[in-house]
Image (cartoon, rainbow, N blue to C red; front, side, top):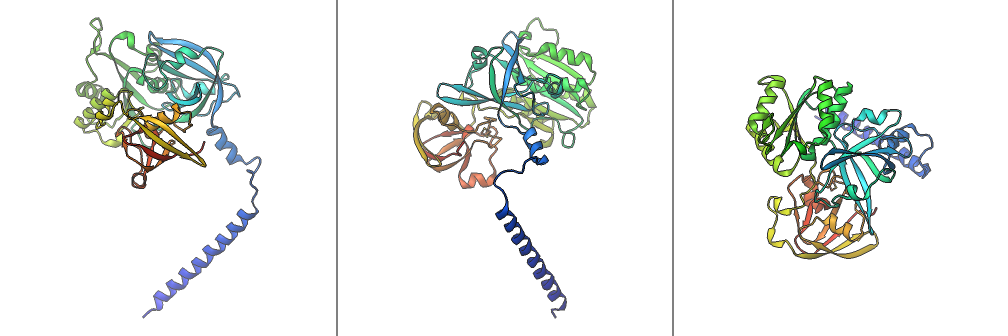
Length: 405
Ligand code: FES
């Protein structure tokens, strides 16, 4: 009894025939296609405008954001700042000696400021932070200089389809910058969000962008800023750390006991650990807890599971890229990406936190330690020996294959 079944088979074969005709048609189209992109293709023009690649920007203003931090304003040389969301970051290309290093900074200005008659974007940087190129901006970047940057990157922004309409921002130190951008955008009326910012600092003089935050809170009731000082005897507001109790208090003030609220964290590793614990205690579902990509800490002892006995050891990495092969030294306590950059070998690093995947490379031999902080590798990548060079450390001599830039 195959009547019905045979009909199905017939239909199936018919479909296969159709698919093969399409394949033939596509093959012909590909054969006759030009190697050059079609001029005036609107889709390509839109894609180029949204993701234009590295651009030249002029530094038009440098101002103090706190006694230890500065805000740098960048205006595009070609008149166009790519569209970005409050919370995303820009990647800067810095030429130091023979090496071109990249360094990500969260944009602290608001998206609407990139659409003004004179468009710009800003980043706010804290001085004396020992990370990759400490104080480069403070020492080498001046008003009138031109610098190469690429933007936007990152997924740390408010998305109404994914996040609750009320949010608690948990910030420490210069981790306040994405929330400065969000607060300004809310004030402008172009970001539909109620935001309470719990901002932890040691002393009130450590508050970064304090005036801008206060102005946003003053201008718009949808923005609230709570400064919390851990060691400031004269401070009259909240004192101590950003604890579970404090988070509960302000979340309930924002949307009641059982209200739906999203939590956004950006700050140092120690604070991230404490805040993650608070999220567990408050039974916050994972989808309601968003955290910014954190660069790997310069002190590897802070990385859980790091083999401390290897600190001070230097290994060799054989680096293959296309027809090139180099052998370079690599310290066990520095990510592979940093060893490459020290040797003048370019690597496409953006987030430097293990999440974006731009620095994805292949391990051909040897052993690496992969930082569990922001390990964004896919399961299949792990199995097939792919790793992210920004968050992997050599624990033996290695042979790696990296993309050609
Ligand atoms: S730079 Fe983003 S994963 Fe390495």
